[in-house]
Image (cartoon, rainbow, N blue to C red):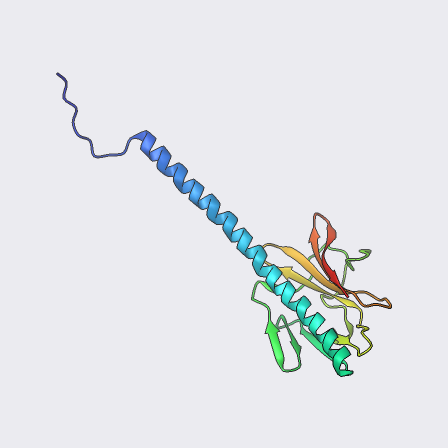
Length: 173
């Protein structure tokens, strides 16, 4: 009768299974991180969009103009005494090769904020100053824009630059 010694190591099959399990865990965590990152930037964009809607409604209700000031150097915006700063990876910034404005991209923008004096003015008659804010997520290298076009009815629209073109994310009055 042949007697086998009791080896205390792993077999090749056990090592392959362990490596496969570790690879699956890493793959799932990367997709979760991408999902969370997308939610993170969308949260910042929705907060900016909601602020614009709020200021537009406040101008209508009070009969006084409201202003949203954008600070390109500090990647922040301010209305009244409230200041909201973007996280360090999100900023007012242009990506080379991207054309604008999003509704009719013809030329490459020169500045990340095209509103006069980097300020969006919300008038009591519901009309808003026209221009575009270009927002860049440096981690995912994705570009977004908040745009207000020249029209009888001011629309506040959010766009994402995807596959060499702008796509509307959200548009409201």
